[in-house]
Figure (tube, rainbow, N blue to C red):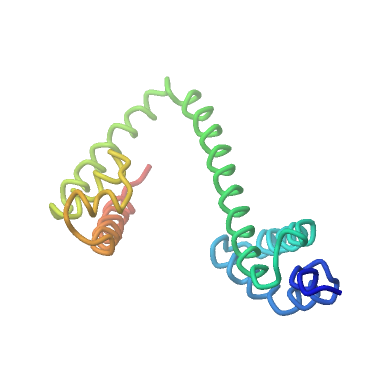
Length: 173
């Protein structure tokens, strides 16, 4: 066989070696993201099926990165789909609750507490939080705007979220 044919993963022995060597690593990688064993197994198996179906397009030296990319993208697609489903359910629930006076009162109280909690953040934390969550700016954009590193933005955002969670955790809805 020619060298170019052997460089692809279509050969069963090559594919089996890639599978045996990397299945658990890819599975563990995606499990860390999704925290669901069944989903991690499914996503990993799907990635290997896609690898096999595209074996002529994927060289042996790119197989592992292909698997990680396919698995990660499939997880993010599933995650985005779940967000849409939850948002739709939330909209339906909100429409049902919109005329409930008690719900409206609790929502108003919660909004007031959230505003208080945001106001209790340090100026730097509040600035990063509002730029990210209200103005929808990415960390990189915030870093450029404030002339700080992306790591500083991440740290400020993390501390802001921790403080907000602690403040709001005590709120009874």
